[in-house]
Image 1 (cartoon, rainbow, N blue to C red):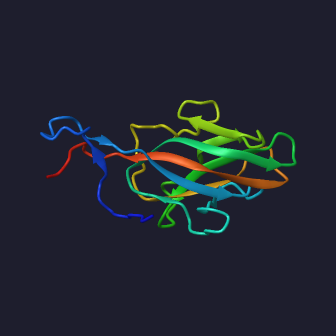
Image 2: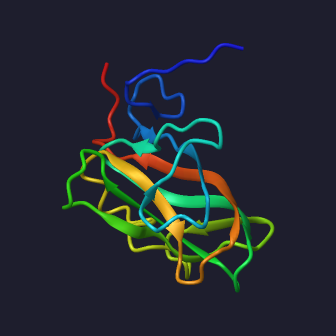
Length: 166
């Protein structure tokens, strides 16, 4: 099966051939992996075997995160997830802006949407897209794990003008 990668904006106006309807943004998904014993603010990677950093584009709006709560040890271990400047700057950093003290040992898939109790301040903030490319970071929360892994999916879209160019 072939795959396609491109840099264009992906939008859909629902098959309106006259292009008179609003062209909605397509939801995207980025997989991630990290160990819950890492210090908060550690770069997450794509998977256990793919060590590339997870980088989201400028104007990304993260709407939700699903992850396997497979942390072990500790007393009800928690995790934090957030972002840092892709270019290493310090002005656009919030290491718990996506997840803040999320339960990491549930033994099942945990999904957190904006407004949920463990959502960070930036999760679901549709009014403020990421103003630049960001690296996703993660690590232990206040209640540290003794081991395990965290794997999951970040759901996001890229905010733009909402029109299809012809």
